[in-house]
Amino acid sequence: MTRSRPGTAPSLPPVAPEVFAAAVEGLSTRLRRRLDAAVESLAATSADAAEDGTYGIRCGEDALVTLTPGPSGTITSPDQARCTCLLSPRCLHRTAALGAAPVADPAPPAETAPPAQTPPPTAPVALPARGPSAGQVRAAEGCGRRPPPSWRPG
Image (cartoon, rainbow, N blue to C red; front, side, top):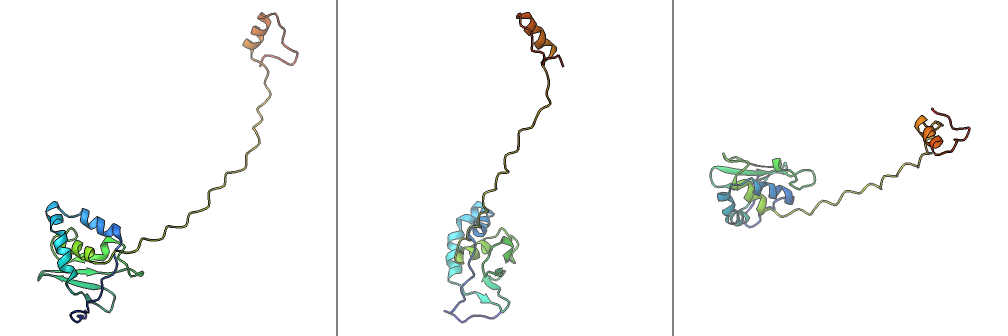
């Protein structure tokens, strides 16, 4: 990694809001209370930019946070931010580094597919011709009516 000159720290890659939110959710309550102060201290720290596009942020003597942006130049996945401390990935260092980075523009909404076309209505299904049941014929005869000749018990 090449060290940047003081006062000309490379800007950190933008971070998708959902990645930062997931990192905050992973923190314990005790670490969440310390997050704002940690973000402020990291915002004043310079980052090391490597030729391979990664960024290294030194957090004390024992922890180094590495941000590896994707092809778009944005941190879009939690595994693109790593820390060398023992609490990683639920550590204050990693979350503070994500919080010190600029917020990525929201992804453009995916193009919506045109509404699915409903299939054309099908012709009504023709049921086989069936005459009245035997019970219907008896009921008709009981009323003094005689069923038409086409009515025959089925």
